[in-house]
Structure formats: structure tokens, C-alpha cells
Length: 100
Image (cartoon, rainbow, N blue to C red; front, side, top):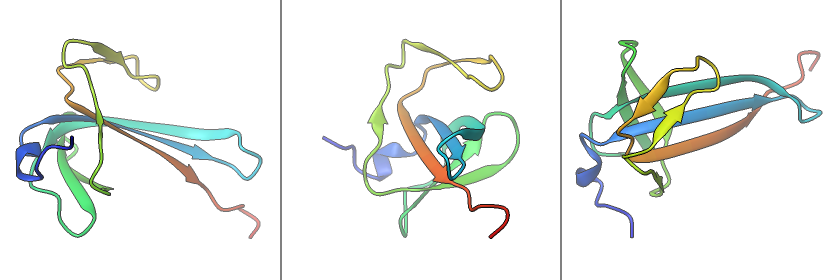
């Protein structure tokens, strides 16, 4: 069961975005984490980045993967160990061909 949208405020989220090329190879990865700063609205979810980079917004369809807050998640891009995560969101983004 998904928590109410108000209950998400203050929860910690880990977001992973993988950018892939037309042939399916990974072009780059972006991994961010932080605290959800306001209730989801208009199909988006905002969180305050833990790295001090400000607020970041992701698409939100009413579902997030539940994380184990006791687990340690190691970011592939930086090696940073992240703990206390409540929810995880992952995205695969297909970048347009540069020649198009």
C-alpha cells in the first residue's frame, strides 16, 4: 500500500537515472538522494538534494519502491554510501540521437 502523499514529506529518497543511447548502451548515470520537501502535485515529486544542490523534481505516478532504511546503498557514480533511505525511484531515459 502506498503512503498518503502528505506522509511522504520528510522521507528520504534515492533517485537513479540512467541515460541510454539508441543502441541501448549507457551514456551516463545520475544518482541523487535527499529529503522529500513537499507533497507530490501535478505528477511531480520534489526533494531537497543532500549534496546541497537545491530542490530536484522527478515525475511521480503515485508509486515509489519501498527501500530498507537499515540498508546501505552505494552510489555507482560516486561510491558514496547512503543510509536511511525510505523510497527509491529509478528512471531510464533514452537520449535522442545527436545527429537527429
